[in-house]
Length: 93
Length: 499
Image (tube, rainbow over all chains, first blue to last red; front, side, top):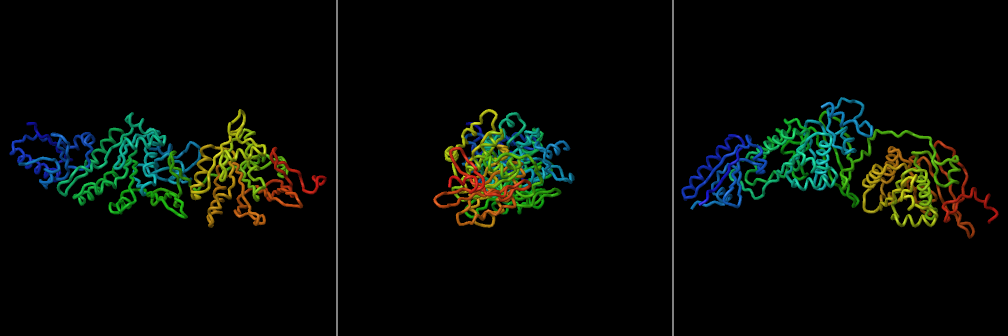
């Protein structure tokens, strides 16, 4: 089974960014409990602004599901986990 | 900065657009001549300017001109777009002849695509817009940009459903950051809602605020530009009408023009020998304004066309603005009285060129007419302009604007340094009275009339006034034939034998 590839973009270690990281990690644990593998990469766009340009990012934090296709993205502190699952088209069975 | 300021202030045509004070803050020219004039040289340098206006008011055209003028004079620039795609902007700019695509390819300009992704969802109420700042900052640093355009940033509001509260406070941070960049920045927003007030852009962020609007009066549409505020610098205070066309924005400071023409004493022929004779043998002074007023059938257009043809034959360029007849119709009608306007348009060697431009008086408002006429004059740079008939412009304006508009037009043409020849239709019941009543604005006034005596129609001309030159005090009878206008001197004297 191919891994789910997620990339979380943040702009500095702000409170909102920390919340998003915590929320996303919790969600990943839940997903991995169903036997799926998740690769998460966290990118700080303040360090790599060109990546923000390439991904046309306006608001952070934002998580982009690179794989499996189709590409999905959801912004915010990711506190509403149900919405995150819908937004990224992922399932926790 | 000093060289930049000079480049903006001393225009290639040598006019001083900045006023005598010389103490105003440094400016950043947009390259839009009339606009820079109103702005006393351009937008304030190193600070943000807000340009607001509804759809179709030309915000993007002004922004692109500002950006590309900078690129042309060696100032790299960044454009941030929240509404149109970068490709559309490049096409738009290239259609205006601004060559943005080239500058982007060469890396001198960058367009940042910040159109919100409508598919993107939001989870939670807190969002940060630091990414916008990081992207702009990155692009500014990479290009070494001196000019920044932020187009339609108000689109951002409402792009993140559920997080409106944090977007609002984040936007304030974005504007504060932009202000601290000390880059010459133009921010555009639509006129809808109270976006700029809520975010304090107008009050706290922008050093300069320009409002664009469209207005419909008497069923004609006019676009108006007004400088609402300008910190530490001058600006015109009126509403300035402007045009948008495939050539870009054309603004005319209808008031506040500081240019003065130099009067000349060089006479030029009217193309009718007998009329020249009534004006001290030589004709009218170059740069003067002449008006032929007459009832229908007195050959006003033929006098105007004779003037045009004589000017072309002397090697001068003529712009003939025809308000009633199409070009073909005019050339054909004048051919029947022996005038070859078509030949003049073909620009034979040694002769001046005639440009015939029909401008049908219907459909457009007077401001637009004024702007179109002046734009054509700037474009062709003729030495003679014919307005035939000028009265067609005023007929549709039944109000008091009519006279003011004609006076303004004539004085603007004088400022341009052209010789102006206008015709005016007098009705049969006018008793020879001029409905335009612009005698004070014309230097030479020729009246044409017809009289029926017995079974013959007589045509008579008089020089009512001619400033600063000899004026014949007699009536001169004339005829129109296939050899043009011929004068026969005082009626009842030279032609006695024939009666």
